[in-house]
Structures are given as structure tokens and as C-alpha cells.
Image (cartoon, rainbow, N blue to C red):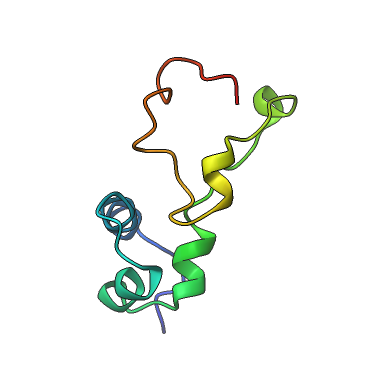
Length: 78
């Protein structure tokens, strides 16, 4: 049976790849997954505590994360 779910190790590899500005296709090739699977698993899952918050504009373009944002840990308002 094919491994359908991403493991914690896979998710860590995605995070590291995104931090290193690697394209989704390169990250996916390393994991043996489709690039769309990598892209789908890089987003923040919104919950009730963030329902009224506006998403950071950096999340709207590649690499779809705000890891390098200086406001990341200072309650940037997004």
C-alpha cells in the first residue's frame, strides 16, 4: 500500500525546503510526492481563535510563508 499521509519527518522536510527557498517540485521530488501535495501542506490551518484575523499578505505568494518576516513574532497585526 502506498504511503498516503505525510509523516512528521516529511512535514519537517517541507519546512526546511521552504526556508531554503527551494521550489515545491524539488521538495516533492525529495519526498516522492506530487508538488501539489507539498503546496497543499504549507498553509496555516485557521481555527476559531484566528477566524477574525487577517492573513499576512506574504502568504499569498511563493513561498507562501512568512518565516523571514521581522514582524513574525511581534504580533504583526495580520
